[in-house]
Amino acid sequence: MIQALAAVDAQTLLDRCAKDPEFFFREVLGDDPTAKQVEIADSVRDNRTTAVPSCHASGKSWDAARIALWFLYCHPEARVITTAPTSRQVEGILWSEIAHAHGAARVPLGGDLTTTRLKLEPNWYAWGFTAPDYDPNRFQGFHAPHVLVIEDEAAGISKNISDQIDSLMTGPHPRRLKIGNPVEANTPFQASCESQGVNTIHISAYDTPNFTAFGITEADMRSGDWRKKVPKDPTELPVPFLIDPWWVADRLEIWGPDSNVYRSRIKGLFPETVEGAYYGKALVAARNEGRIGLFPYDAERPVITACDIGISDWTAFWFVQMHGSVPYVIDYEEGNNEGLLYWLDLLKEKPYRYLDHIAPHDMRQREFSTGRTVAAVAADNGVNFRVLPQTNFKEGSEAQNRIELGRTLLARARFNEETTEDGRTALANYTQKKNQRTGELLGIPDHNWASHGADAWGYLAVGLQVAPRVTRPPQPTRKRV
View 1: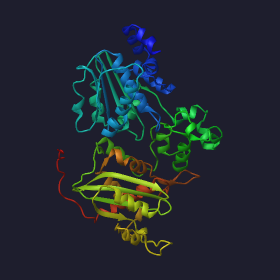
View 2: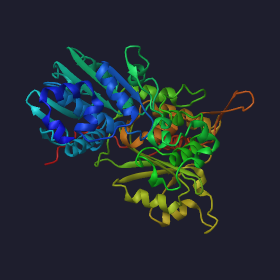
View 3: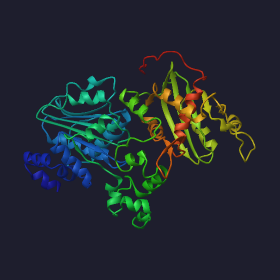
View 4: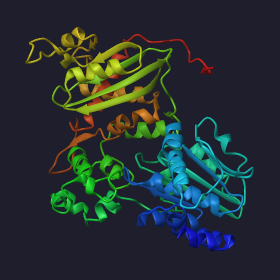
């Protein structure tokens, strides 16, 4: 086939590839795209804007990388701009895929390739960089007859950046691909997906190869019949590195079929407005105000943790640095059925300098095996928790007051997007309990998978009322030599 391609007139081959992205994928790059991946590429060819809300691990970055190469090489003096909320998403994921596809192409592509740039000529290139909300001017100056902007993990792109990208959609052939997991509601990504002028392609887990190859439906997953359809060895799946039935079955049991996180990560749908959600509106406000973004660990500041430890249940830890009265949430960890020593080791392995470890009153409970309190065992292993008293308020229930303080804290908090997604997901899904017969909200928190991360957030809010605080104002980032 390569010899046949070489014999074809270059302009004829270029015209064929420009009209047929699948041909470029298969015959030039040597890849085997799925039906959904071809559908997305064809949509970019035919529409000014394509939006792809996708389930977890659907192969979306694989496709976006190859669309970037197709557009760059098949359109004269094209400019391809790729962006994402964090540098890891730009360089470590999308551009890693671009480099792999470029290097493995059946037909040598040429060009000067670096970790985040591929240049064919001075005015013919692809370039990847992050989209910090404070610097929308990075998107100026890229006007050309053929422009493609790829927004990876588009749910994390702020309105400020999204509006600036709009200014690039001029000229004879502008294209825009917004792709990512729809983890949060009321974002510019959701607005695009629901716009009449945008071609939206949803990708559910049930649309991906490890499900379609065996005819596995959502009904099969809920009933358990999927186990009769799959091979016994997961390595025999058509695409083992994509989302698979075993993972979905595990998440379905933990999250439940009606949860927001199941909708977004499994079905590729945006979260619905959750009736009785305690922190939903506050999280939307944090996103719209640019308080979810790049807020990494500052090595010059100490870290405060707050936890909800379940010895035989879910455990959650928040990691926060105080900038005056503003909490910068730099990290989050959660897990199930891990012993106390596992979590103590995890704290020690983090590169943080700790100031305080806030813990709930049940850390004073005695371990069955040792007869000593959990806090005492932790202290023996080098971690000293400050245990909150069981009753912290004169009026109202302890849980409700924690929630109110948690809302107040959330209203000023900054979240490092890359490392706190699971925690923010827990907060978004922390809801009031319902009467199963009438659907009436009962005014008390529902104890489910999300409540541990939310409870830990509440303990953080309580503990910070009296915790030591760092009052030195934020310092400019120092460049390392």
